[in-house]
Length: 305
Ligand code: NAD
Image (cartoon, rainbow, N blue to C red; front, side):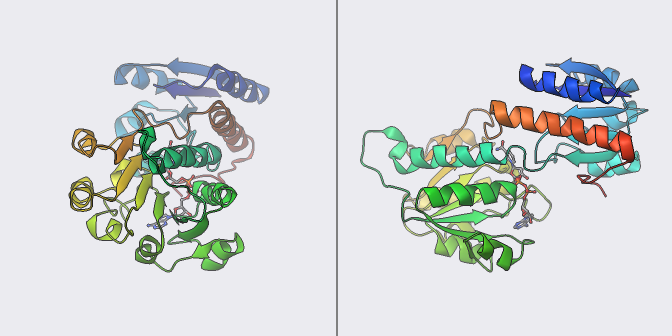
């Protein structure tokens, strides 16, 4: 079988080496398409691929149309909103992600950004500490759970709300389970977003909800920009000069947010999963999942069931 690794933004060399070893150990062939600049290059490369590993690369109906032999596409990472799932299903292509492989990397970045935010972005003025503060985790998935673990090391009081994870699972991790998003924002000094971008979560973080944060509240987003209602958040930050917003996903309205001097920060490029470890873990997990699919039809991580 031909396994195509199509990455506009390539994996680290060590990850590619690991993927190659995995794929070849199962008797398959690895083909690399890295740093492509035109969609046409991707359309050409997928033509004879039986499987494909991608990162943030877009797999839409046009790509799936061109991929005549494709059986499985694996997004090396957690979010899979770059794959058109409906089109994958109608093309009988299994779409998978590699959950959990980059969650520690994202969780560590949350705290890197939080310390910077509560120390006033290192502007020389006295800040605050995280110890004793209440941290709200919106969505208790792989990243949310790692954030809870690290937060306890900082001596924070940890709260979480998840629409699908039962309260007793949250409580068993030593975290206060909230009954709603509203309760989470009302109860916490800092709220960290870990919801996926779905039709339900799109633009779901807006004025009314974030306004529930107490004085001096911080909102941190390492999830997706699409979950934020940017117009409403900008209005709130103008009305509430005590609030801060830090994000790993640059908003469309970055220029307007930048005017909120000392209360806003965005990484120039999404950095959450950008560690050597996460890169290697996710890439190798993707290769293993493809091997398992071809070996015995395993679809444990399928997201378009
Ligand atoms: P995950 O699938 O392990 O967890 C997602 C959690 O969200 C699940 O527990 C689910 O029950 C919950 N959820 C779904 N819809 C919800 C809703 N409407 N309200 C409340 N909870 C809801 O995913 P993860 O690995 O924890 O990652 C979370 C998100 O973070 C990803 O979807 C991705 O968009 C983003 N992410 C960003 C980076 C980055 O580089 N910044 C890296 C990895 C993941």
